[in-house]
Amino acid sequence: MAALLEARAVSCRYGERRALAAVGFAACAGELTAILGPNGAGKSTLLKALAGLIPCEGRALLGGVCLADLPRREIARRIALVSQDPPVDAPFTVLELVLMGRAPHLGRLALEGPHDRQIAEQAMRDAGVLELASRPIDQLSGGERRRAFLARALAQEPQALLLDEPTAFLDMGHQGQVLEHAARLASSGLCVVAVLHDPNLAATWADKVVLMRSGSVVASGPTHEVLTAAALEDLYGARLVATRGVAGEGPFFATIRAGS
Image (cartoon, rainbow, N blue to C red; front, side):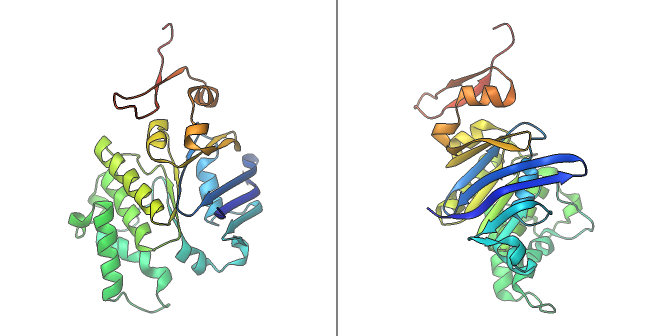
């Protein structure tokens, strides 16, 4: 299957600090790819590079075309990124925020029409924030705000959806809902890439897994091949055990207490 998003020898720096070191990465339409790794591994930086938001060496490609050769509006129509902690600079309502996702599809001075509002309403429904449509963003909880920004990304109708820690601030129920919806979007043809901290969520929902450490990819491939207790022990420096549920699902990973 041809990759929709690719990084070819992509390297990035923040001042003197190297954030990515000649990273190779590929994600396909129709798949949910999870990126795992310890803090500072370069996961968020890789998402920004794939969205064309930061200067990098090497090449980031969308459908085989270098992002540097595409207009910014074209990239915004085709790639949506939900960052870790999106800024809230003004008390927009949830509906107003989600309608901003339609901007790449509108003319410079055009206003949203009925079709755009229908798409925004469906995006809010899918993200579980339709009942919050009239609420100001700055009055929402962290989890509610995260789902509102997810709705804005869905309203862009992208080909690729990049999610940076989409389950942060969410309770167990909403974590499952968000990733179930992400997996459903992937199965419908979207390319979904999600940075996750919980390997159990990746084991449950991801088609492919990428493991990163110190700005480099150390392993990638189908989830059942890459996501093992040994690989995660090496990645995080923690003792782990893999188990399976009563119905045979899994694996599920748990840390082992020191001295056990």
